[in-house]
Length: 382
Image (cartoon, rainbow, N blue to C red; front, top):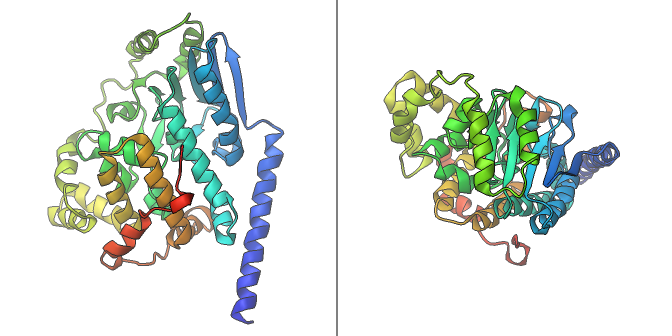
C-alpha cells in the first residue's frame, strides 16, 4: 500500500474516532454535564459527568464561562461555589483523548479547547466574588484549572491532587506555570516534573488548597456558605476556618514530603533538567533514586519545556502565563510526544511511550525556545 493511501486511511480513522467522541459528548449533553443554579445568594456550579470522573470537555467550558461572568457582575450573587457529582472525583482532567484525535486530523477542537479553557481559568483567577472550589476527590489537570486560581480551595481526605502531564508528553498547563513556582521552595518544580500525587490534608499543607474539611462535613459547609447574607471574603474565610477547626482527621500525620523538603530544594536547584537528574543520581538516597527513575520515564521534551515554563511563570501574571501556555499547547499539537504519550498511557495503556527525541541531551535549546514563540494573530487574547 502506498504511503499516500496509508496516510489517508490513518486520517480517516482518526476523523471517525473524533466524530464518535464528539457524538458521545453531544449525546451526554442531554444529561446535563454541568448544572448551574442560584441557591440563596450563591451561584453553584456542579460538574456532572461522574462516569468519566467529571472530565472537562469543551461544551462544559462553554457553559461555565458565560455563567461565571454573569454572576461576577450580578448584584444578587455574592459568591460562587464549584463542586462535583459522584463522590469520587472533582475533575480528573480535560477530555484529552478528544483533543488528540482532533490534533491528528487538524480539527479546530485542538485550538478551541485550550483557548477557551485558559480563558475560563483567567476568569476564575480574576473573579471579584469569593470563588470556593470544593475539591472532594480526584483533582488533576483541567480540574486543577477549575479550582486553584479561585480564592478558596477546600480539600478533603478524598482529595487526590496531581499534575501528571509530563508522562503524556504535555506540560502542567491551566496556569500551572503561575501557581506551581509560587509554592514553597522547589516544591512546585518537583510536582511539575515528577507528577507526584498529594492526598488529603497534604494538598493543603503543600499550599494547593487553602482549607481542609472532612468530606462528611462538606454538605453542612455548603449550606452555611449559601445561607450567608452579603458575605465578604473575610466572612467566607471565617466559615471555612471554623469547619477546618472541627476537622481533626489526619491532623497528627506529618506532611508526606516533610522529611524530603530540604532534599527537594537542594536536588531540584539547578540551571537545567540535566543538572537536576545529575543531582539525583549523585545523591544516592532511595528518595533521589526513585525520582531519577520517574524522570527517566517522562517525555524529555516535556521536562525541558516544563522547567522553562515554571522559570518564566514565576515572574509573570496569570494572564501572561496563560498566553505562554497556549503557545506551548499548540507546540505540543504540532509535535509527536503528546500523541504518543496519550496512546501509551490512556489508549493502549502499555505504559511504554517511545519519545522523540528519547533523551534530554537530544532536546536542543532551540527546539524548546520554538515552543515559546508567538503565534502572531493566533495568540491567546482575553
